[in-house]
Length: 225
Image (tube, rainbow, N blue to C red):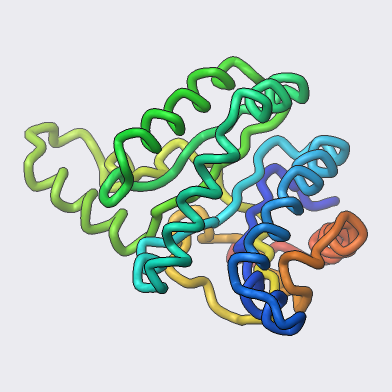
């Protein structure tokens, strides 16, 4: 029986190294990397994949240089434009932000929420955008909410930011690094994982197709023999 591919997730890694190999700044790598996302979304739609997610900025990324962090925040804000909202609506893309408001400006939060609101009725594909997210922080926040809750019928997962995110069937991390980096562990319980050596700015539809083929070739046992 062919594996079902409902949700593909990406840890987009390698922008800085890609830029460095070309004697460019890390910010140049981020500029090139963001151009890959629309291509992957469009290809996913063609493959009839219902859910797609991108890990763009972790809660640990605040430890990077102030100039790089500022650039990434401005890059996100620039891509929350009405033009891109219109494009998302044209393709039926519903965008859902997964992350914390802490350290984000009110204007950026407002733009993110506006983008979500404008695309909430689209139903071709759900795109989860993990920005200012970390699973460790998600767990700590959930545990605090449980302590304050008086509802004994609720469970730990009911308090997670990712409670409505479907399980990830395939996680692809680019750049060849072999770690999860505090990503969405609860959704990764039974995920197939591919550590793709290609740096994110060089990632394309052909490589994505090969990654999908590898997923379909694997036998998913879910604990069975």
